[in-house]
Amino acid sequence: MVENVIYPAYLDASLSRSEGRRVAQSAAVETPTVDEIAKAVQQVGYDAVIERDKRYSREFETRGRVLVNNADDATKNDIVQAVAAYVGILRD
Image (cartoon, rainbow, N blue to C red):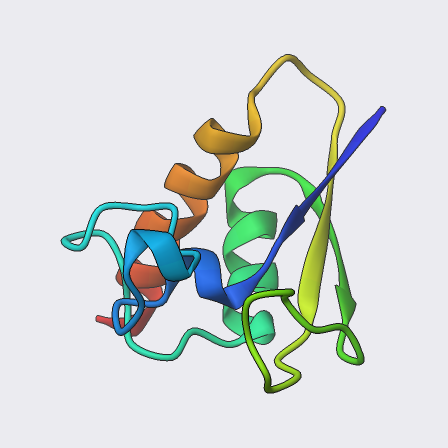
């Protein structure tokens, strides 16, 4: 079982690609939270574990991270893209 890490910065529309955003600007959301990300991960069909005391290396504030247990052959990019789509849907 592979464990992937998703930081809120990966989905943050206020950040540039060089600052850590991994999805297109159109798929990104403003200030995503680890709770939203974990809920979206579960909607996609994976197990999620929230770690609130962790910090993305390119940021100064501690926003946490979500550990995703990936049992199939999905790549990290596939998971991040799917999670971004679901976070956008959850906000609508």
